[in-house]
Image: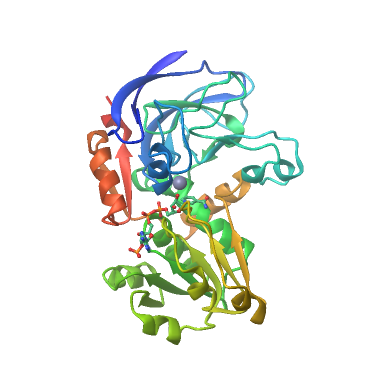
Amino acid sequence: MRTVNAYAATSATEPLVPITIERREVGPKDVLIEIAYAGICHSDIHTVRGEWGPITYPQVVGHEIVGFVREVGSAVTRHRVGDRVGVGCESGSCGECEQCLKGEEVYCLKGNLQTYNGLDPLDGSITQGGYSQAIVVDEDFVLKVPESLDLARVAPLLCAGVTLYSPLKHWKAGPGTKVAVIGMGGLGHVGVKLAHALGAEVTVLSRTLAKQQDGLDLGADHYYATEDPATFEKLAGAFDLILNTVSAGLDYSAYVDLLAVDGTLVILGAPTEPVQVDAMSLIASRRSIAGSANGGIPVTQEMLDFCAEHHILPETELIEASSINEAYERVLASDVRYRFVIDATTIA
Ligand code: NAP
Ligand code: ZN
């Protein structure tokens, strides 16, 4: 075991505090990563505040992790000491089921191992995530970070990036398709860049026009405020694919009405309220409503390589670990442009 410094939640209501945690010894297939940067995802906040159900404290969250390989196990073949690598939302899966064999580890039929707040089958411990100095991960769940991507900005691709890239590919966004992104936060802003790079016609649906210029600069073709009822009249039937990244409940039927015939609304944002949709809106135009989780390892690597090729990086604000709690409040107030990234050297 090795002891590392981290920032943890100790209850659903108190601020995160510095603690020390234990990392397991490097096993034959393990990689020890010195963490350089960790992104703050809204899922971290849902989790530590118990919004997705009770959790075990103390809990170190963070599943947008990048850093350097510092040690490899005796059977490791994919990574070498010194490599720039990343870890996302999953750190393990059964490896044998139909989904794992397809490279869709995130949909493992036996349940994947979450990078944090997961039950580690190796020793029955609760996994602890990226707001820490180092992590030990099975080499198969470690991604290669292309050299050309600025390490200080790349971390959010490990969750936000693949969470948008995976449905864009699955529902075949590209030239000739009209894609809308609801919510321009951490996920949404990366979705705009990715959909644009894939060649789709991209529309942002944000609550107000406050971020309009940013949206257009990031690659959106159109930008509308959803606080204006005229938006819903004007855009009725307009989109082949709508990606919902909103962290709160929505009037989903109003957005289903913006789908073209055969269009799909994909739910990515994960509030606790149930999704309710008017049946007739779906039936009348053979529309679908779907969900999508971040992505398996192959699509995550494909996304990183795509971002290197297309020079795509998230818009980030680098913070010291002592500012995590303030950053949480700013995420909740949608006052983030567009992802906070923790400099892990400040986790002391
Ligand atoms: P975020 O940075 O806070 O962005 C969420 C955006 O939603 C905000 O920027 C805001 O956009 C909009 N929004 C917030 N509150 C709203 C409200 N009450 N009504 C309408 N719009 C509202 O969060 P994030 O990190 O992108 O995560 C978004 C959601 O995705 C979270 O629920 C997170 O847990 C979930 N998530 C899911 C997956 C997955 O695998 N499916 C992966 C990662 C995250 P505007 O200001 O532009 O309106
Ligand atoms: Zn996330």
